[in-house]
Structure formats: structure tokens, C-alpha cells
Length: 282
Image 1 (cartoon, rainbow, N blue to C red):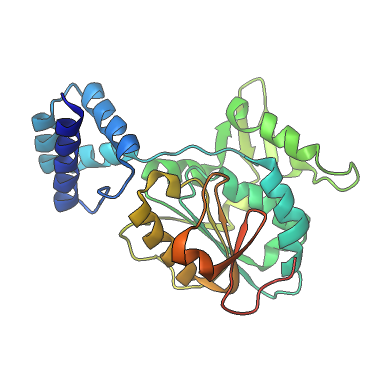
Image 2 (tube, rainbow, N blue to C red):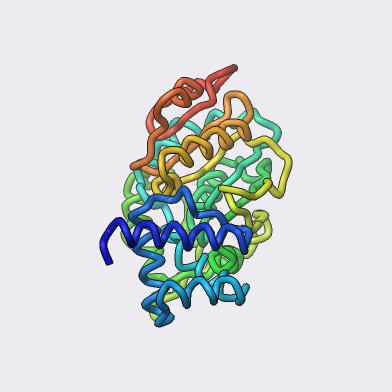
């Protein structure tokens, strides 16, 4: 199939998916979504006609397609330099706040949610926090709620690199937060952490937020890169509107805010601060 013909066919499928389900992937990056649709067709041995028919007639299959299209990749303390910046420069600025609202948008299977909670607890801030975590993937959220992960995937190099950045007398006791069983290749999050987070299924592109709070701190890491530029701008505007004035937005290491929206934030390190009012000095 020629590239232009294939692109047209995939766009036709995304329109069908939009019309017969709650999901709209029409403004996702063409390259990434085309590859994923092609893989769905291969995995289920379907041509485009069969894919469209099954999508129209089988709601359970639609959810399987959504799981295949969305990307759920995350790690504990991924990008250690980002977490160190937050620990040293940003989070201490919250020490006089009586309440801290936090939203992880596109939280995937929850490792970054728990990474932040370790830092918050280490800085004696966790008790003041109300934490929301959302994702479009039901499967990812189920994993996040259990706090059960593969040791080999989630407790190795990133955590060791992060621990190495602390002075010995200042590093958190990570055994307090995670029960690691290397022999059985498992890691379990402290059960007290599981009770602290509200995990909710939510489509960042279309869905109304399942909570009404504005937030002081908003994580949306490695989500925007899967959207085209038009959708990126829409989502950044939504994130901006959900922040308190002076609130902080954390994007992925390869994500930036450009154009007019860049004037609505002040950036230091990996942190974008909503800049239309008082913001923390850090």
C-alpha cells in the first residue's frame, strides 16, 4: 500500500473510531499511530475492512485497540536529574503550604506517582497532599492501583542513579517505600501509599476532568510527544487552566512549550511555572 493511500485509510479508521466510541485519536502523531494501527491489524489478522467492522460491532475490542494505541511506558525515578531538581529546587518551596493539590495526567502504571510520593514524604510534605492520577488506559490504571511491578524493569538503574545523588545521611530509606524481591522479580509499593492516591480513568483529549480542584503541581510527562502540534497546544492550554497561578507543570525531558503558550509560563530547569501571578522563588 502506498504511503498516501495508507495514511488516508488510517485516517478513515480513526474517524470511525471517533464516531462509534468515546475516543478521538485523530490528532495524534501520524507516524506513531499508523504503526500501532498496523500492529493491531497484524495481531488480530484483520484487513482494514475487518478492523472497521469489528470496531463498530465489538465494544470490548475497541478497548483493546485503545490499549494498543496508547503508550504506557514509565519507570521509577526516570530521568534522575529531573527528580533531583524537584527535590532540591522546587518541592522545598511548598513547605509553608497547608495543602498541596497534585495531578499526574497520563500517569500510566503509576511509577512516577510513587516516585514523587517518596520525595514528598522525605520532605515531610506528603500528609498535606491531595493526589489525583489519571490515564486513558484501564489496564495501566489497574497496575497503578496495585503498586506491583517487575523488579528488573522498575527498581534497577534509575533508582540506583537517583540514590547516588544524595549524601549518605540524607537519602531516603527506600526499603521503607518499596518491598523488593529480586529472586521473584517483584517490587511492591508500601500499602499506605496506595491509599493516598485517587486513580481515575480519564481521556486527556476529550474527557471532562473527574475532579474540580485546581492544582499546585501538575505532571504530564512524555504524553505530548504523541500528539500533533495542534493537539499539543490544546492540551497545554488545558493544563495551564487547571494550574493555580504560580503552579508548576512538569513535562517530559524531550517536550517543550512553544509559540504563544510559552509566554504563559516561566521556565527554570524542567519546571514550567504559570507566570501570570506570584510564583515560587527557587
